[in-house]
Length: 321
Ligand code: GLY
Image (cartoon, rainbow, N blue to C red; front, side):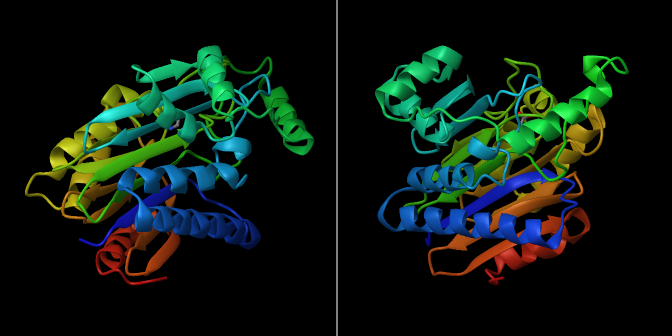
């Protein structure tokens, strides 16, 4: 089977200018290429790590250097990775000054006996493997956040703060299948805008923000972590990917079911099943995706919800774009 990588740059409103759209699409294209390059000489696991690391480096998505800060202006990152062949997983949460938390998550998986390391402990591991590098929110972004936060002081309880600010930003993630049929998934994020220090969402929680299991499928989620983790969205998607239903209808059913419990516009997912069938669905206005197949065809898109039927057909037929 030809290897494939399917990634997302987040589910959200994606109400952005043409210039911003071009920058995002460029970042998605680079991430697809990084994943495809890794697939050529490595595994599905290498592909998801490289695609996600590329998006973390882009500075235009909510991950790595481009991530949302917390309410105090500090960037705290979460990421997770899973190998569908061994069902091994690694994750980090609330880490600062680690521009590529997905690489640290893989180290947790491969070099420790643990699954999830947080904050200072995770940062110490990063220092030991040259993954620690001090960085801060840019002055311009800090100014914009501070101004935005001021609007809410004295007017609303913390629980009413918006979960998005720069309308398009959310989590990034990738799923892949290699030519041996191994599946993998990875997800990385700065979390929701205006989060409290120490808040952790779904992205580093196996079964919530990511999951992979050979014979079933691999999934990576984007959206509001509080809903996704209570619903264990990726676990439910992957468990159903082995059923007779089409992958697209599995995603639709699970995301609509989450919507029924927690409300509208909370989640999007990308997935690949064990036969290599890709699928994308979101209950938000749109989702940014990138797709690459080992034969060389690639597609990037910021797909509106109402165009997802069409997008899924294009992906399955491997029509480039
Ligand atoms: N889905 C990312 C988060 O809520 O943290």
